[in-house]
Amino acid sequence: MPTLWRHARIATCDEQSRVFERGAVVTRGNLVEWVGAEDDLPAGLRPARTIELAGRWLTPGLVDCHTHLVFAGQRAAEFARRTAGTSYADIAREGGGILSTVRATRTASEDELVARAGPRLRSLLAEGVTTVEIKSGYGLEYETEARMLRAARRLGTAHPVTVVTSLLAAHALPPEFAGRADEYVNTICLDWLPRLAAEAGLVDAVDAYCEDIAFSAAQCERLFAAARALGLPVRLHAEQLSNVGGSQVAARHGALSCDHLEYATEGDAAALARAGTVAVMLPVAFFALAEKQLPPIEALRRHGVPLAVASDCNPGSAPGASLLLAMNMARRLFGLTSAEVLDGVTRHAARALGLQRRCGSLAPGRAADFAVWSVDTLDELGYWAGFNPCSLVVKNGAIVLERDA
Image 1 (cartoon, rainbow, N blue to C red):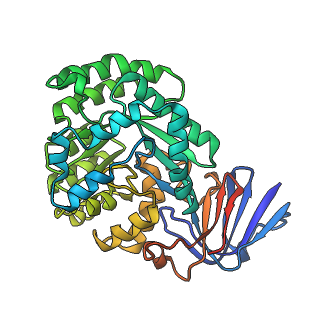
Image 2: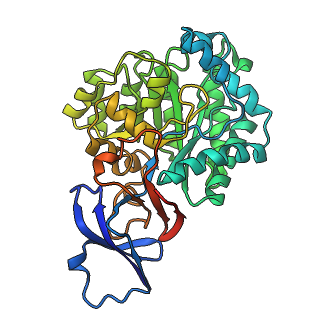
Image 3: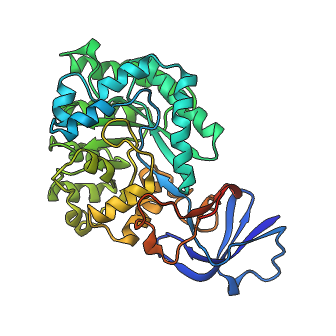
């Protein structure tokens, strides 16, 4: 039997960006059956349940399409060093940065990883996030990478959130392979990736960090060829601290997304547009690292590259678990409009995960995932910092969180 969600102002976040000032949604089971103006509700509708939303705004459930949510330890001491003037790259070259988290994560059990990540995931859920991507990449050895991915899957089972996993074994060069980056990439391609892909449902996509302190464009190219041969989509961290050709690799392999992009060029934007690749903006990392080089927003707009926004939740460059804060920073630091930011955490973020036919917009046949907001206008999404106006979260047609806002 259907459920009627009525008396709402609705932003569908679909390709037409439809807005209904007095709208309604009809759900049946875990899917949207109808959405539109309340005056146009289907004749003869007999809902089993009616939910009154009292004029609040309703959007699709938010999608956080780039997180490193599963890890152990923290890097507060490194943050103190960075605020005193030491660069992220210098700390990484000294053996800190990602490798610091690797040391802590390797010693953590799967249960401990799940327990540590749970509060971070619940923080996102409270902000209306109903789909989240979680990367590995703090193991850099087979067993720990697999443990991180299993922890991510358990988080999706234990919480009313869809979890999408990415294998990010090519995140940094582990100490065991010092000076042997090509050998490490070959190990991932020929050993780890086939074994992990064979474990049903463990890996949804393959990611890499293409940077002068991480892996070269040629090494990422080999990794992506191996992933695509196994039928796995790819995404890439690229052009965050310099430009070593990552965007072009991502475009050549039809990557779902290319993320960071502070040092991307006009030519990179054109290549991403031709490939249909989503550009994921990560303003919390830009802020936390005190970067000066802005992503080429105008070039990305000019070429029609879809823009997504994500939290980048991680213990080093983006120590926080708030997509709402990332939305605020995307507007204030990167100059995105309120409409771009909302599309960036709904429709375009879903596309960055290859889930645009399932979530990220409100339309018949899409997942009945949505968030309800106690705000006067949609401009308030990405306006508030340190305040959460989400008052209701619905996942698969069921209310999973309700709070005063």
